[in-house]
Image 1 (cartoon, rainbow, N blue to C red):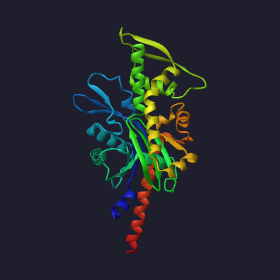
Image 2 (cartoon, rainbow, N blue to C red; image 1 turned 90 degrees about the vertical axis):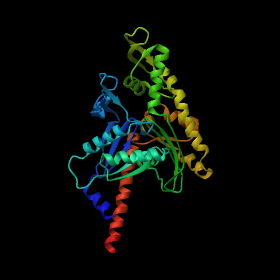
Image 3 (cartoon, rainbow, N blue to C red; image 1 turned 30 degrees about the vertical axis):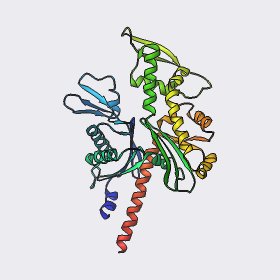
Image 4 (cartoon, helix red, strand yellow; image 1 turned 90 degrees about the horizontal axis):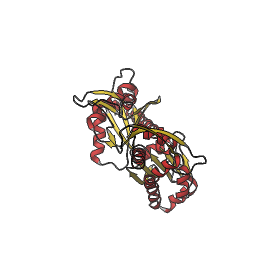
Length: 346
């Protein structure tokens, strides 16, 4: 216990939002110090890591045959253990600008429904990457803490965290999750739907980066006051030649509504399973949106119509989980300080 206390003094303990699309790192007393895509570029033949993060993401769909750019996390869990380990190690080294006496303690946000084997994989990957101690925190709880929701009160707080690989929904009271649900439909699934829409309707093949740009530029899930248009470039599936076309926000909304209906359904199912007294609290408090998916146009309007509840977006939805893991770090440090004080009295 004393070692843990001293470790807090001499190491850069960190909270990590290890997301399917992006990873964020929160360092104690410094705030968020890193935002990088969860992408690794490696040599297919030798397994050598060529790039991690932003540089690797720029290579998606643009690499020669021997170089592959991969996302080692799928649906919020580790799909490739070795690559994830290398990615975490890279992030730790990038954050640590100077050598420390002890390795860092890391708090990592995880989906609420991952299995024991998947939890162990996250812990092992972080330990092999250089962590002295790993603490796991469910993403809905981390998002609620990062959004400054009063989770310790005997009243309901509801958070909907729409990330890259998963959507996490939870009702929290007295510091615990009363109802929690998770589905593998989120930002990546919406991007894939846009790719399939162009392929089926226009015979146009577009890459992941192009589809993501379409989603961010004109994507919506509720009618807009002023609809938008965007020029999209890709490869004609029939002729094999480059081609350009103009699409509207109405078309992209049509492509997104079917998968987004699944997100709406899981929100409704969570509300249906919420105890009556806590459900009553939500009539006035409503629900809070977090995660990159919450930035999609019209999402607050759609959920407000579907749930009949007030819907709010967190002040910084992209950072909620990372900030929440940072707050857990502070809690652990305070516990260590209390233990140290007790030890000195003894």
